[in-house]
Amino acid sequence: MRSGRTVAVATLFLVGILGFSGEGAAQLSLRDTRGDTQDIRRYRGKIVVLNFWATWCVPCRHEMPLLGEMQKKYQDKGVIVLGASVDDEKSQPLIQPFAEKNKIPFPLLVGATTDQMQQLQLGEAIPATAFFDADGNLIARVLGELNKSDLQNRLEWMLGKHHGKAPPAFVNGLQKKQAPDSTPSVFNH
Image (cartoon, rainbow, N blue to C red; front, top):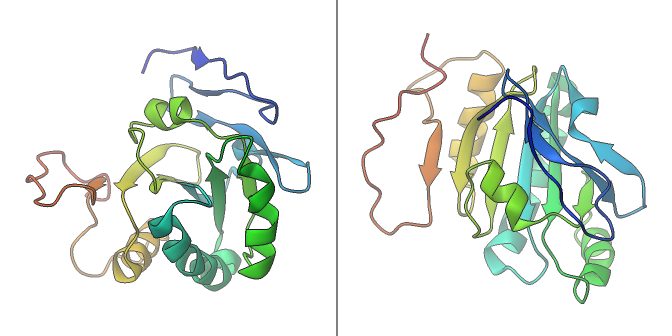
């Protein structure tokens, strides 16, 4: 990505931009369901799991309890989960009731866009998840619904507990048959 490259995003709830600095650190600011600004830079020093989802997306609804479980399990170890909703203006009012009903323990952000997903090389399909290291660098992407054992293994690796094979930097769970990944894992030293 080019240094200084940013994309202006105009939505009612969007208060920031997504871009990349020369170091590859992400900048993303959206409002949560309470109206508070959540800026990804606020979480520097923590591992951030940024999940793009929507209330109308069945696989997204399936993985929300898993993300909640991982937030509870790893929050004391420096992990934060953020749920960036791509719901449009019509379905945005369903976000807070969904969060309350499902007891979502992490911030749900309102007004995320597919433009932001594309900037993170996540495409346009949801669910899609980006993983950022403690320095704010994008280090992994998972397209499609998250798998509990894979997610847990990925978080353990990010926390420095290297057991078994390193998780790949890119997983496309949206494809029926996955092509071999020739990209080296960012977890290999």
